Length: 155
Image (cartoon, rainbow, N blue to C red; front, side, top):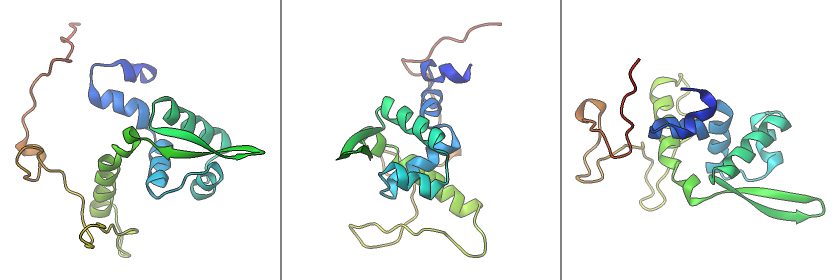
């Protein structure tokens, strides 16, 4: 596999990594879910170079994760808004946050707490089976070949 052709692989994880698989992109997405929308806000929060930020935002727009919406005509400036495709990344980001809280924390505790607006309770994100609602654990999942799988190529 080559890094620049991951989005063409018959593997859902490879295709996803092609879009969001670098640290700056993940941090930009974190900021999006924290409701940061403007270039200067991203740059200030992340302390990322303008060039790098611009490249990552362009990529997220190109893949349909963000859309650019003008908020100023003179000078022309844009906000970057999560599309539905971008909003669908929320479980991925939350799973990474949960892992970080559980395994990378320190004595100060969690940096952010998440409250479910509907019930008003603080929560930990969990992944559940879409069919039975039970929590999913790696040792309880069996993987089968799907219709999009490419046949293995020999040596």
